[in-house]
Length: 253
Length: 224
Image 1 (tube, chains in turn yellow, cyan):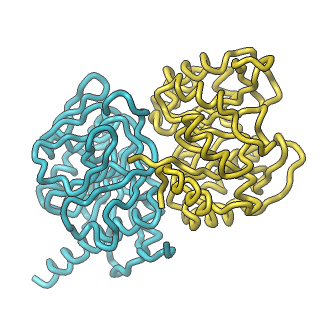
Image 2 (image 1 turned 30 degrees about the vertical axis):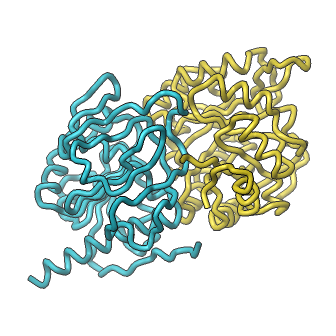
Image 3 (image 1 turned 135 degrees about the vertical axis):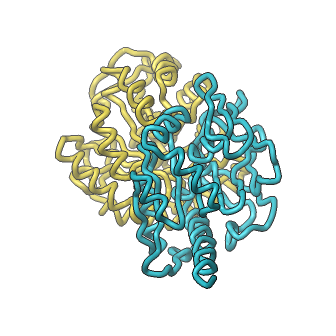
């Protein structure tokens, strides 16, 4: 049986891992290579690196980080942030990443999803979707530019479109929940997961282990991504897996 | 899990080639082999592949693109030669799929035909690609499983699966709606649908087992 994945996310800027409330108010949580090796030993199922600085220099630094991480970490690595072209994708994939996550660039140029998946395969095309609830209705619009720019585009419509274009996986972040540690947006996660045929990673809002469980069971997510609960050692990956396994969720042990 | 438990010692003049035909996560495979204490050669030239005594055929992406790249890079005959000589060969993911007769991918394409059988689309109803960690059920004991527990998890990412005519070649299966042939062997050929280079310590151990098999074969040849 396919297991549910637990994915620590490392937000990186200028080669350092950071995490803060809704991506501002950053706190330094360490060296990315060291962090990655730590999570690998803890049996994280995958790692996501998000370059939140996303400057051209930052991307080069990120490629260097990925290169060093991939020498000692033998689980899938996804890199997002500041990827705007097939060339950017190649740079990160060649450095040793297995998947690239694109967000703003995909919204402004959806063909990039098709180009990337044709060139490198759908298995390495992750589309990151940042979504925000519209007027407390069960309707969400997507945001770009690290949540700065509302687009008015319906999240479910966009999710289906990215899959048609060749996305192999969706990384879905609720902008309402992110950074608040009060749980994932389960309604959003479930709606997107049911709307598409590809795996969905739930992101944004994990504050305890029950939140992970809810996202997988009620939100029907295939994987859960979390940052601060792991970075600040609130829980270890092993504790998260024990908790989920006790509640009948298949996890890799 | 103990880190680097899979580390093995190889002789200095060992030659392990990773076939570079423009369709693969070469770096991940090279990193894994390097971690085991070996110095793999990433080989884009048929001669370098044929000089190696253990060869890894990686692959990600689409089967047809992989077939085209194998043809353009002159590696098709190299693969046939390796199979004919029973050179130790480890094929990964699309590397496994292209060894089959045909694939349903992209409307149907001919492949290398080394393993009679068809590569089929995964059944509808489950998420596609089959992406993540799943258990490999060991059907037989085999040196490739040395030190790896039955039902250990390996990392998969694929939308098509191989269905060999000769099911006796299948040494491990994985359940994803249908029983998938996740690892098969034929003489010195080992082929996996999962990615050992992305499967943590069990994956490294599997590569170590393969290299040990290749080394034993070579030492036996030297003694002759």
